[in-house]
Image 1 (cartoon, rainbow, N blue to C red):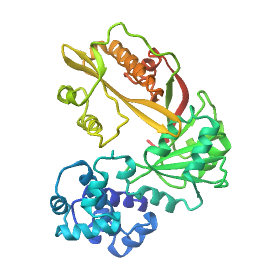
Image 2 (tube, rainbow, N blue to C red):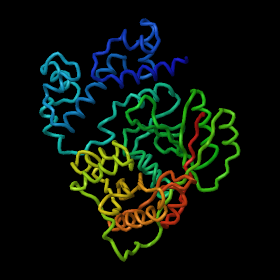
Image 3 (cartoon, rainbow, N blue to C red):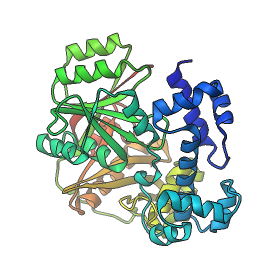
Image 4 (tube, rainbow, N blue to C red):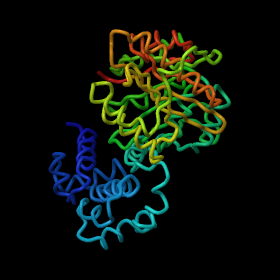
Length: 399
C-alpha cells in the first residue's frame, strides 16, 4: 500500500474515533506503519503530528456538541475522554479562545456551517503534497468567476464559499488566468475543482495532479466543449469522465390553480416528515438536516416542500439557498417521491411549486449535476419543469 493511502487510512481512523484518547502507537499500528517512521511522515503529508490532529479533531466534535445539543459541559468532557471538566475547559479554551460555556453562549443560536465542521486537515495535506502551487486569495478567485461568467461558474461560486476552501494557481497569484480550489468537507481527502477557461491551462493542472495516484477532480465547461488534448492526457492518466449538467430555470413564475395539496413545510410537519422517512421516502440524515434548519442551527437557507396525498407526505423537495455577494441561487439538492407509479407528475408538480416559491425570493433556481436519467432530478425532469443546461460538469477519476 502506498504511503498516501496509509496516511488516508490513519486520518479516517482518527476521524472514526473522536471519543478515544488515541496514542501515536495506536494510530500508527492501525495504519500499518512502524512507529519511528510514522510520526514524521504524517506531519510531512499533513502539517500535523498524528496526536495533534487527533486532539484538534476531538475539539471540533466537542464544539459541535456544544452548539447542537443541550448536554452539559461535564457530560461532553467525559463522553470525549477527558479526565475532568477542568482539563476539557483548558484544552478547549487553548484552541478556541473561549471556555466551553462562553462558546455555547456565543454560538448556540447560530447556524452550523461546513466551515465550523472543518479541521482543515485535507487542505493542509493538499498544500503539502503540491508545493508547486501558489496560494490565491479567495476574493481574487471570486472576482475571476464573477467577471467571466457567474451563471456558468455558479456551482464554483458556491463551492468556494460553503465549505472551508483553499485556492491555488500555477499562474500569477495576484491575477490568475486559471486556478484550482480544494474544499474540506471534513474528510481525509479534499474535493478538488479546476477553473480553466482554455484547454492548455486545464492540461497543465491535469499533468500536475496526475503525479498523485487516485486523485479526482471536477471542471465546469461550456456544453458540448471538445478538448482533444485534455481528454488524451486524462486517458493516459487512467481517468474516466462522468458528465452531468448544471441547469437553471429561465422562465417566468409558474401558475397554479390549486395549492392545497402542496406547500412549504414547517416545524409542525416534523412528525409527517419522519413518517415519510419511515415509509422509505428519504434517509435519517435528510430528516435531521430539516429539523436542524427549523431550529436555526443548521442551513437556514433550506426550505423543504411537501406534496400531500390523503393527508400524508407523498413527495419531498429540499431547495437550499446560497448567497455569494449579490448572487442568490436555490439548488434543488434532493427530491424524494414515495409512490414510484406516478413519479413524473409528482416530480413536475413539486418542481413547479419550488420554482415559484424560490423565484419569489428573488433568486435563481437550478439543479446542480443533473444526470441523463429518469430520476426526479434528472435532465428530463428538469427540462420538463423549464430548466435549461448552462454548463457541463465533468468529473474525472479512476474507477
